[in-house]
Image 1 (cartoon, rainbow, N blue to C red):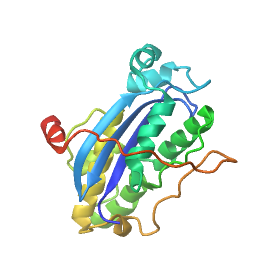
Image 2 (tube, rainbow, N blue to C red):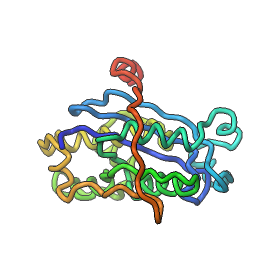
Image 3 (tube, rainbow, N blue to C red):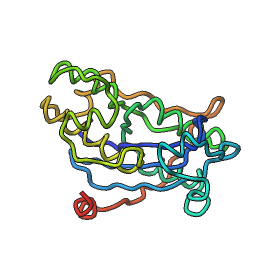
Length: 217
């Protein structure tokens, strides 16, 4: 495993892990962010209630997702395509992995999630060795400690790009050239809805080009 992965971030409409309302992706190839994308999601099934607490965090409303969101079925198709053959990375990956799995279960989709590595776990292990312990290891705290560019926290696309940059910067400082060196235990296996078997993945969908990423950042 070289430095090739897909960073993922979900936002949710309420406390239910099935209530995905936004997702962001950042594709890393050869240690470079080559494409990124984010979109709103119509939360699946009965998970579509938007709580005030969640709206206050990310600013996404039911009206936003009704007007501009993709279905979970289309979202899952895109996620499966872009992560095919790749490891997913997320900050607090247990959350993002469980959102993907719960939304699949709510929708009756049997496709398994990607394999996941966690930048929260990586940061907790790396900082005491490379730098100093941090007061906490939240995404914005780690990004600031690494002097990464400012970003819009809880914007799913920005959070995904920042998670990707955390991996790349920690790898650079530790002189690592692969995910296996950063996560010796390997990624967490895919999660599938209970009682189901994974289905085949679809074709890969092209995201934003490297040039488009450079113009934005």
